[in-house]
Length: 367
Image 1 (cartoon, rainbow, N blue to C red):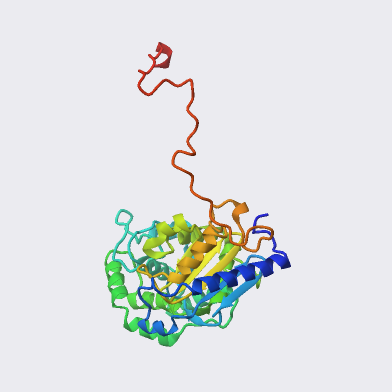
Image 2 (tube, rainbow, N blue to C red):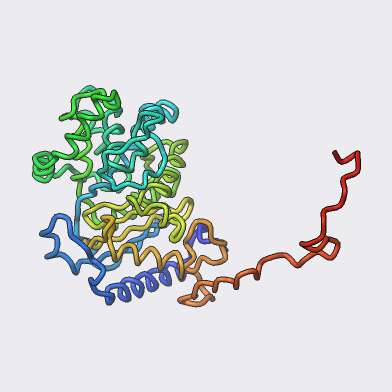
């Protein structure tokens, strides 16, 4: 049975037990690998840890500190890009922002110079372009439209911009201002820089809970429809674009390694959140504020590695490997061992000449 089928009540209870055990085990790992916190005062929240999942049938699990609210930060880029696609279409959007991994930090002053556009919408430069091309007559309308969509994704009509945080980020936005003015000088941005930046940072300042974040991921996994409310947040036709760029570009400059090792489309933010969407299956989210050198949550990374390795949630895994909520399988299946070098090579064919033998002469008809 593949996990995208509707879960039984017993499987729902089993999945919750497994997530609780996963959270408890990762909580014991400590903070040894943490490099930084953002902002630095977040070190006071170092022990906060939450994990949530929302299945496409509407079932939701929330374990740990899931009532704690935190700003989306860079996770908001997913939703800004989704609305930009809806407003402009795929081809027009691609003329302004690409979909290639950059390999550079999220705030790097680097572009796709051949196409004269930012590499992708998950880095700051690309997110600024996405904010620039949103439909709306002024800043307030653009922010309002984006906020209304976020409310549908999260299933919470009370989501709002944190104006105090927004003002603080605007006051400290020297690097983003520099990137923006440089981009406008190159023709990559068209609107007023202060207005573009305010739209972008307003989305970053929206606070969510871990449970709401998993619901936002589940809305993407469910083809753009919130599985708990039934309300559509974005057109289905662009869901593949959004999840695709999450998979290849969503984890800052560690995105390639993430795609290979973890294999779950995801987007992280420096506030310590990670949101994931597995198409036709589930939305997942983690919050823990301790960050690694790339700006990703250390505990969050470890949780998703375990979900991939032990639970078989890598999107290229065999469906039979999926164990989350499954009954009758091992509770903590170990990953299959790697084969010995050469073990998968075909048996040598007897009709082939030895390596040292000269090749047979070509017949004239073979020339």
